Image 1 (cartoon, rainbow, N blue to C red):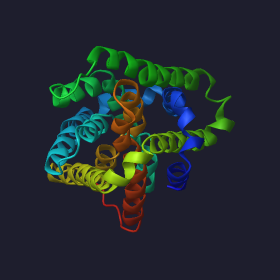
Image 2: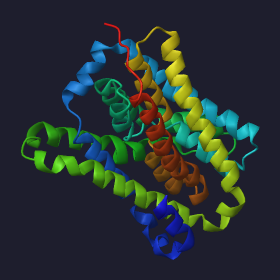
Image 3: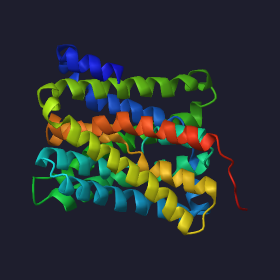
Length: 293
Protein backbone atom coordinates (compact mmCIF):
# COMPACT_ATOMS: atom_id res chain seq x y z
CA UNK A 1 0.00 0.00 0.00
CA UNK A 2 2.87 2.35 0.83
CA UNK A 3 4.57 1.74 -2.51
CA UNK A 4 1.26 2.23 -4.32
CA UNK A 5 0.78 5.57 -2.59
CA UNK A 6 4.29 6.67 -3.57
CA UNK A 7 3.60 5.54 -7.14
CA UNK A 8 0.39 7.58 -7.15
CA UNK A 9 2.16 10.74 -5.91
CA UNK A 10 5.38 10.28 -7.90
CA UNK A 11 4.51 8.13 -10.93
CA UNK A 12 7.62 9.19 -12.84
CA UNK A 13 9.71 6.99 -10.53
CA UNK A 14 8.01 3.79 -11.70
CA UNK A 15 6.64 4.38 -15.21
CA UNK A 16 9.89 3.54 -16.99
CA UNK A 17 9.96 0.12 -15.32
CA UNK A 18 6.98 -1.14 -17.35
CA UNK A 19 9.15 -3.48 -19.53
CA UNK A 20 10.30 -5.44 -16.46
CA UNK A 21 6.80 -6.62 -15.48
CA UNK A 22 6.89 -9.87 -17.47
CA UNK A 23 10.51 -10.76 -16.54
CA UNK A 24 9.69 -10.11 -12.88
CA UNK A 25 6.69 -12.44 -13.03
CA UNK A 26 8.85 -15.15 -14.60
CA UNK A 27 11.31 -14.81 -11.73
CA UNK A 28 8.45 -15.01 -9.22
CA UNK A 29 7.20 -18.22 -10.82
CA UNK A 30 10.73 -19.61 -10.81
CA UNK A 31 10.94 -19.03 -7.06
CA UNK A 32 7.58 -20.78 -6.72
CA UNK A 33 9.01 -23.77 -8.58
CA UNK A 34 11.92 -23.80 -6.17
CA UNK A 35 9.44 -24.52 -3.37
CA UNK A 36 7.83 -27.47 -5.18
CA UNK A 37 8.84 -31.10 -5.57
CA UNK A 38 7.62 -34.04 -7.61
CA UNK A 39 5.73 -35.23 -4.51
CA UNK A 40 3.47 -32.19 -4.78
CA UNK A 41 2.33 -33.38 -8.20
CA UNK A 42 2.12 -37.04 -7.18
CA UNK A 43 -0.21 -36.02 -4.37
CA UNK A 44 -2.82 -35.13 -6.99
CA UNK A 45 -3.29 -38.84 -7.65
CA UNK A 46 -3.91 -39.41 -3.94
CA UNK A 47 -6.73 -36.86 -3.64
CA UNK A 48 -8.20 -36.41 -7.13
CA UNK A 49 -11.70 -35.45 -5.96
CA UNK A 50 -10.72 -32.50 -3.80
CA UNK A 51 -8.14 -31.35 -6.35
CA UNK A 52 -10.80 -31.54 -9.06
CA UNK A 53 -13.23 -29.60 -6.89
CA UNK A 54 -10.65 -26.89 -6.32
CA UNK A 55 -9.95 -26.56 -10.04
CA UNK A 56 -13.65 -26.42 -10.91
CA UNK A 57 -14.30 -23.72 -8.31
CA UNK A 58 -11.18 -21.79 -9.33
CA UNK A 59 -11.84 -21.68 -13.05
CA UNK A 60 -15.62 -22.03 -12.95
CA UNK A 61 -16.72 -19.54 -10.32
CA UNK A 62 -14.10 -16.78 -10.25
CA UNK A 63 -14.47 -15.73 -13.92
CA UNK A 64 -18.27 -15.98 -13.59
CA UNK A 65 -18.27 -13.82 -10.45
CA UNK A 66 -16.08 -11.27 -12.24
CA UNK A 67 -18.44 -11.12 -15.22
CA UNK A 68 -21.54 -10.70 -13.04
CA UNK A 69 -19.94 -8.04 -10.82
CA UNK A 70 -18.72 -6.07 -13.84
CA UNK A 71 -22.20 -6.10 -15.36
CA UNK A 72 -24.00 -5.21 -12.13
CA UNK A 73 -21.63 -2.32 -11.36
CA UNK A 74 -21.58 -1.20 -15.03
CA UNK A 75 -17.79 -1.13 -15.11
CA UNK A 76 -16.12 0.39 -18.18
CA UNK A 77 -15.06 -2.18 -20.77
CA UNK A 78 -11.35 -2.07 -19.89
CA UNK A 79 -12.03 -2.67 -16.21
CA UNK A 80 -14.46 -5.48 -17.01
CA UNK A 81 -11.81 -7.13 -19.17
CA UNK A 82 -9.26 -6.73 -16.37
CA UNK A 83 -11.57 -8.16 -13.71
CA UNK A 84 -12.46 -11.18 -15.84
CA UNK A 85 -8.80 -11.70 -16.70
CA UNK A 86 -7.75 -11.87 -13.05
CA UNK A 87 -10.76 -14.12 -12.39
CA UNK A 88 -9.46 -16.52 -15.04
CA UNK A 89 -5.99 -16.71 -13.47
CA UNK A 90 -4.76 -19.66 -11.37
CA UNK A 91 -4.33 -19.67 -7.61
CA UNK A 92 -1.98 -17.07 -6.19
CA UNK A 93 1.51 -17.87 -4.95
CA UNK A 94 0.72 -16.25 -1.59
CA UNK A 95 -2.15 -18.69 -1.00
CA UNK A 96 0.20 -21.33 0.42
CA UNK A 97 1.43 -18.92 3.09
CA UNK A 98 -2.11 -17.86 3.97
CA UNK A 99 -3.15 -21.51 4.14
CA UNK A 100 -0.34 -22.21 6.59
CA UNK A 101 -1.35 -19.25 8.75
CA UNK A 102 -5.00 -20.39 8.61
CA UNK A 103 -4.10 -23.90 9.83
CA UNK A 104 -5.31 -25.35 6.57
CA UNK A 105 -3.92 -28.28 4.62
CA UNK A 106 -0.67 -26.81 3.27
CA UNK A 107 0.19 -29.91 1.19
CA UNK A 108 -3.22 -29.70 -0.49
CA UNK A 109 -2.79 -25.95 -1.03
CA UNK A 110 0.57 -26.45 -2.73
CA UNK A 111 -0.86 -29.19 -4.95
CA UNK A 112 -3.86 -27.06 -5.92
CA UNK A 113 -1.64 -24.09 -6.77
CA UNK A 114 0.65 -26.32 -8.84
CA UNK A 115 -2.22 -27.94 -10.77
CA UNK A 116 -4.11 -24.70 -11.43
CA UNK A 117 -0.85 -23.08 -12.59
CA UNK A 118 -0.21 -25.86 -15.11
CA UNK A 119 -3.79 -25.69 -16.39
CA UNK A 120 -3.50 -21.91 -16.74
CA UNK A 121 -1.58 -22.35 -19.98
CA UNK A 122 -4.84 -23.36 -21.68
CA UNK A 123 -7.64 -22.28 -19.35
CA UNK A 124 -6.67 -18.65 -18.63
CA UNK A 125 -6.58 -17.55 -22.30
CA UNK A 126 -9.57 -19.73 -23.23
CA UNK A 127 -11.81 -18.51 -20.39
CA UNK A 128 -10.83 -14.89 -21.05
CA UNK A 129 -11.80 -15.34 -24.71
CA UNK A 130 -15.04 -17.10 -23.72
CA UNK A 131 -16.26 -14.16 -21.63
CA UNK A 132 -14.92 -11.14 -23.52
CA UNK A 133 -14.10 -12.44 -27.00
CA UNK A 134 -17.16 -10.68 -28.41
CA UNK A 135 -16.15 -7.37 -26.82
CA UNK A 136 -12.41 -7.20 -27.55
CA UNK A 137 -9.88 -9.14 -29.59
CA UNK A 138 -8.35 -11.91 -27.46
CA UNK A 139 -5.25 -13.46 -29.13
CA UNK A 140 -5.87 -16.81 -27.48
CA UNK A 141 -3.02 -18.80 -29.08
CA UNK A 142 -0.46 -16.08 -28.46
CA UNK A 143 -1.65 -15.79 -24.85
CA UNK A 144 -1.22 -19.54 -24.38
CA UNK A 145 2.39 -19.30 -25.57
CA UNK A 146 3.00 -16.34 -23.26
CA UNK A 147 1.56 -18.14 -20.23
CA UNK A 148 3.72 -21.15 -21.08
CA UNK A 149 6.87 -19.01 -21.23
CA UNK A 150 6.30 -16.84 -18.17
CA UNK A 151 4.52 -19.36 -15.93
CA UNK A 152 4.96 -23.02 -16.79
CA UNK A 153 8.55 -22.96 -18.03
CA UNK A 154 9.97 -21.04 -15.02
CA UNK A 155 8.03 -23.27 -12.60
CA UNK A 156 9.36 -26.39 -14.35
CA UNK A 157 12.93 -25.09 -14.18
CA UNK A 158 12.48 -24.26 -10.51
CA UNK A 159 11.20 -27.77 -9.75
CA UNK A 160 14.14 -29.34 -11.62
CA UNK A 161 16.71 -27.21 -9.81
CA UNK A 162 15.03 -27.92 -6.49
CA UNK A 163 15.14 -31.64 -7.29
CA UNK A 164 18.88 -31.76 -7.97
CA UNK A 165 20.29 -28.75 -6.09
CA UNK A 166 17.69 -28.28 -3.36
CA UNK A 167 19.96 -29.27 -0.51
CA UNK A 168 22.80 -27.04 -1.66
CA UNK A 169 20.43 -24.08 -2.10
CA UNK A 170 18.70 -24.59 1.25
CA UNK A 171 20.35 -21.49 2.84
CA UNK A 172 18.75 -19.14 0.30
CA UNK A 173 15.28 -20.72 0.22
CA UNK A 174 13.95 -18.73 3.21
CA UNK A 175 14.65 -15.53 1.26
CA UNK A 176 12.76 -16.57 -1.90
CA UNK A 177 9.30 -15.55 -0.60
CA UNK A 178 10.69 -12.15 0.42
CA UNK A 179 12.14 -11.66 -3.05
CA UNK A 180 8.84 -12.68 -4.67
CA UNK A 181 6.97 -10.27 -2.38
CA UNK A 182 9.28 -7.40 -3.32
CA UNK A 183 8.79 -8.17 -7.02
CA UNK A 184 5.00 -8.16 -6.68
CA UNK A 185 5.13 -4.86 -4.79
CA UNK A 186 7.17 -3.32 -7.60
CA UNK A 187 4.77 -4.65 -10.25
CA UNK A 188 1.79 -3.13 -8.39
CA UNK A 189 3.57 0.23 -8.08
CA UNK A 190 4.30 0.28 -11.82
CA UNK A 191 0.64 -0.35 -12.70
CA UNK A 192 -0.56 2.31 -10.26
CA UNK A 193 1.90 4.80 -11.78
CA UNK A 194 0.65 4.02 -15.28
CA UNK A 195 -2.97 4.68 -14.23
CA UNK A 196 -2.59 7.79 -12.10
CA UNK A 197 -4.84 9.99 -14.27
CA UNK A 198 -7.68 7.46 -14.33
CA UNK A 199 -7.51 6.31 -10.71
CA UNK A 200 -9.31 9.31 -9.23
CA UNK A 201 -12.33 8.63 -11.44
CA UNK A 202 -12.60 4.84 -11.10
CA UNK A 203 -11.02 4.04 -7.72
CA UNK A 204 -14.29 3.54 -5.82
CA UNK A 205 -15.99 1.36 -8.45
CA UNK A 206 -13.04 -0.96 -9.04
CA UNK A 207 -12.30 -1.22 -5.30
CA UNK A 208 -15.88 -2.35 -4.61
CA UNK A 209 -15.68 -4.81 -7.51
CA UNK A 210 -12.43 -6.34 -6.26
CA UNK A 211 -13.66 -6.66 -2.68
CA UNK A 212 -16.84 -8.39 -3.86
CA UNK A 213 -14.94 -10.67 -6.22
CA UNK A 214 -12.46 -11.80 -3.59
CA UNK A 215 -15.14 -12.19 -0.90
CA UNK A 216 -17.33 -14.35 -3.13
CA UNK A 217 -14.33 -16.56 -3.91
CA UNK A 218 -13.43 -17.02 -0.25
CA UNK A 219 -17.02 -17.70 0.80
CA UNK A 220 -17.89 -20.06 -2.05
CA UNK A 221 -14.67 -22.05 -1.62
CA UNK A 222 -15.37 -22.55 2.07
CA UNK A 223 -19.10 -23.20 2.09
CA UNK A 224 -19.31 -25.37 -1.01
CA UNK A 225 -16.59 -27.59 0.42
CA UNK A 226 -18.43 -27.62 3.75
CA UNK A 227 -21.68 -28.59 2.01
CA UNK A 228 -19.91 -31.53 0.37
CA UNK A 229 -18.79 -32.83 3.75
CA UNK A 230 -15.09 -31.93 3.76
CA UNK A 231 -13.39 -31.26 7.07
CA UNK A 232 -12.52 -27.82 8.38
CA UNK A 233 -8.90 -27.84 7.19
CA UNK A 234 -9.89 -28.69 3.62
CA UNK A 235 -12.66 -26.05 3.66
CA UNK A 236 -10.20 -23.38 4.74
CA UNK A 237 -7.72 -24.48 2.11
CA UNK A 238 -10.26 -24.34 -0.71
CA UNK A 239 -11.47 -20.94 0.46
CA UNK A 240 -7.95 -19.51 0.28
CA UNK A 241 -7.12 -21.22 -3.02
CA UNK A 242 -10.32 -20.09 -4.74
CA UNK A 243 -10.30 -16.55 -3.34
CA UNK A 244 -6.64 -15.70 -3.97
CA UNK A 245 -5.60 -15.30 -7.61
CA UNK A 246 -2.23 -15.11 -9.35
CA UNK A 247 -2.78 -11.43 -10.00
CA UNK A 248 0.78 -11.04 -11.26
CA UNK A 249 -0.16 -13.15 -14.27
CA UNK A 250 -3.20 -10.95 -14.82
CA UNK A 251 -0.98 -7.86 -14.81
CA UNK A 252 1.51 -9.41 -17.24
CA UNK A 253 -1.13 -10.54 -19.74
CA UNK A 254 -3.04 -7.26 -19.49
CA UNK A 255 0.02 -5.09 -20.16
CA UNK A 256 1.18 -7.29 -23.05
CA UNK A 257 -2.13 -7.81 -24.86
CA UNK A 258 -4.47 -5.03 -23.69
CA UNK A 259 -3.62 -1.86 -21.75
CA UNK A 260 -2.39 -0.50 -18.42
CA UNK A 261 -6.01 0.16 -17.47
CA UNK A 262 -6.88 -3.51 -17.99
CA UNK A 263 -3.99 -4.39 -15.67
CA UNK A 264 -5.35 -2.21 -12.85
CA UNK A 265 -7.88 -4.73 -11.42
CA UNK A 266 -5.13 -7.35 -11.12
CA UNK A 267 -2.79 -4.92 -9.38
CA UNK A 268 -5.41 -3.76 -6.90
CA UNK A 269 -6.59 -7.34 -6.39
CA UNK A 270 -3.04 -8.22 -5.35
CA UNK A 271 -3.16 -5.61 -2.60
CA UNK A 272 -6.63 -6.52 -1.39
CA UNK A 273 -6.43 -10.33 -1.39
CA UNK A 274 -3.32 -10.24 0.77
CA UNK A 275 -5.11 -7.99 3.26
CA UNK A 276 -8.30 -10.08 3.29
CA UNK A 277 -6.31 -13.32 3.42
CA UNK A 278 -4.32 -12.08 6.39
CA UNK A 279 -7.47 -10.99 8.24
CA UNK A 280 -9.16 -14.32 7.54
CA UNK A 281 -6.06 -16.22 8.66
CA UNK A 282 -5.99 -14.23 11.91
CA UNK A 283 -9.64 -15.07 12.53
CA UNK A 284 -9.18 -18.77 11.84
CA UNK A 285 -5.98 -18.86 13.87
CA UNK A 286 -8.02 -17.95 16.93
CA UNK A 287 -10.46 -20.83 16.37
CA UNK A 288 -10.01 -24.55 16.92
CA UNK A 289 -9.68 -26.75 13.85
CA UNK A 290 -11.87 -29.83 13.84
CA UNK A 291 -10.70 -32.49 11.39
CA UNK A 292 -12.04 -35.82 10.24
CA UNK A 293 -9.97 -38.89 9.40
